[in-house]
Image (cartoon, rainbow, N blue to C red; front, side, top):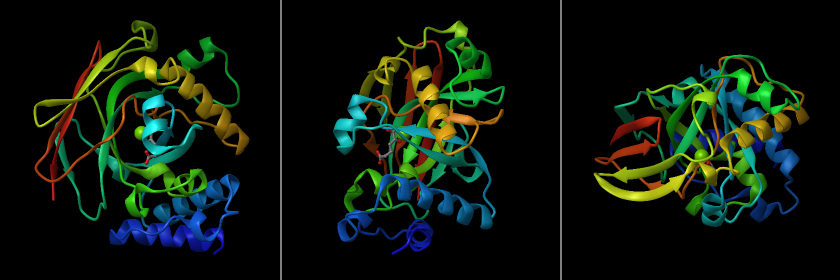
Amino acid sequence: MNTSQIAEKLFEAEEGGKSVRKFTAAQPDFSLAQGYEVQQKLLALHEKSGARIVGRKMGMTSKAKMEQMGINSPIHGFLTNRMEVADGGVLKLGKRIHPKCEPEIAFIMGKDLRGHPSPAELSAAVSEVACAIEIIDSRYENFDFALPDVVADNCSSSGFVLGSVRKKPDELDLATLGLVLEKNGQPAQYGTSAAILGNPLRSLLALVALLDEMGEALPAGSVVLAGGATAAIPIAAGDWVRATFDQLGSVEFRVEK
Ligand code: OOG
Ligand code: MG
């Protein structure tokens, strides 16, 4: 299959709620570069169906996630307006296949960023920091994929919830924010923002460098998810999930069918 056909398959899998086998199983030479090519074609299919890109997400930026998924290099995907769930709102599962969620740190960009900014330029380009929960849902059977597969599948992106407390990067020590993820009132994961490449700002820096390799900038207004700070946990209809972070308050949602 070529990259256009793979993009079609992944789009159909997501729309129809039916998982597919990882492409590297039948095409072992399917490369990371081709994975990103598929991802761009997938974005075009989402845009054709009326979705709008609102930001980017980083993946595999913590040891917990690398160990859970068996992949050890940072990757990025896109976020659309259709993926956003309001803080305190309801996630309708719809056609999701085997959804999970994970606690993250989010940046809302105030200025365009491109290339290799200095630490000062990086912080100055961030207008707000928020706590967040990402909802992921691999379109692959059993969440089983190699690096090019997961990149093609937009890094399992499926949804995100942004916390309502907003801070400036210099109002926080971004490397030391403790957090707890609860499901139905029970703690499910504990973590720290340090798990995200030592400091989530490093994840933002890595994203901007990776986008630059594709000839792209990160525009003002973008939402950026820096990557899961803990392993992801499964969610199902009826669940209530909340993540609480030092200095950034909490973010929560309920899950319905
Ligand atoms: C891939 C998505 C990774 C993260 O934060 O590391 C990711 C997956 O785990 O299926 O979102
Ligand atoms: Mg994530």
